[in-house]
Image (cartoon, rainbow, N blue to C red; front, side):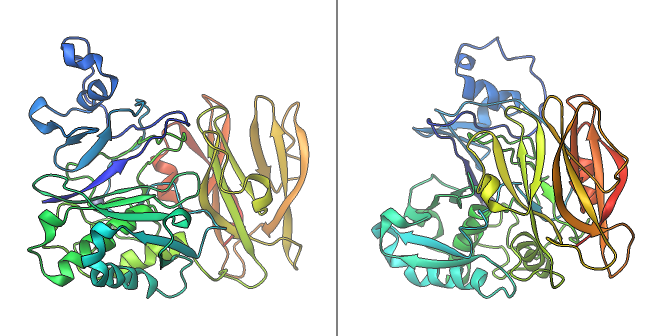
Length: 403
Ligand SMILES: [Zn+2]
């Protein structure tokens, strides 16, 4: 039994979906049914006819993944499989946090206890800016939970975050989970809520689409390894797939670390502020970092996508820190450097972005700088593992030290 992720699309926006890798594109033009771009895409991912089920508005693939028939697939593919906790790179907007409103559809009224218990699992995490609250007003809810017969073997489905908003819908297959224990019914709901805030499956390499998952808003649902989680998988993770009725019923220590990493309440060091990270892959291929939510907010549909907090830095200049200069290079690449003499050609100085350390003092950690020469883009992360997942990005060294 597997849980399911609905990869959402939206007609008003651009593109959806990528998923898994590749595999052969050989049979693309050979079968009549593959004139359907979604079906063709699913097959390009390597799924066989026997694994694809038409369930009306969607294709249900390998009992695990839903593809909307109205989605517009994209074949962009990145990265390599690993087995740590993973985020999608799409997270709940900073100014939506910490109050995520959940509306329980009347079809799920008999599961209110389980829903409250599932919410409690997430809300009990300390130092975390994700808190779910049930609202009785459907219109203002961020997430709706409904009962939906998803077919045998599918326990639930959920959307990933989009445009800084939590995944908007959780579908629970009461038919499937009714016979499970209370703790397991709760687990299914908590698991789906995890997807709504940007968790991918911890064990995603075992048959699940892995990366290059492009949402309709141009954001990629790459599987980003979460810094600090183990490399050997996590059997205790509530976010493991394929464990409906048998999976972990509490968050593992690494699940907790992950949600705290993605949504920390407290800045790691007094005086620092979050440096928000965005990425435009749809048009300009540009990573962007700013301490000001005013600049891009939750992201700008289809262009810059909110990717959470990149790291923490100082908004003013404490002792021993240095300024980070922000440049705009030609053909739209934002570039940051602490070197006053590293002046990119034909570029515009946009000012001092924030302040950091030039050496590893005061427990500051390295922020690595990468460059993608094929489309000229600089990328900064304190998560070295993440950098290695980025196809085409080459490590240039340590940019500075921050938190
Ligand atoms: Zn799942």
